[in-house]
Image (cartoon, rainbow, N blue to C red):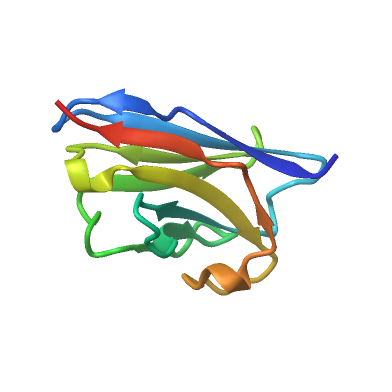
Length: 125
């Protein structure tokens, strides 16, 4: 079965850290762009947080997470990670990973083909 499964979310205090994982099954991630997106409560639109190219040569970070979040991929484990440090209450959201079979990074959700089910991240004291 072709799917993405996110894990690693939870409740953390402001200033804390979490590492999200996105494991692929049924296919290999080698040739895919992988993006992390989030959707905050209150009906907000899903936004691109960070993206990594298939070659690992290019990455994208939203301005709101630059310097705090780091995306990485381990193709041997067929997994992509999002290390999140110095978390803020405004980082609270459901985080999704998604794949795009392309050599080009994109941050528009509609350009991604396969999505995970999401993992909740809550930053609160």
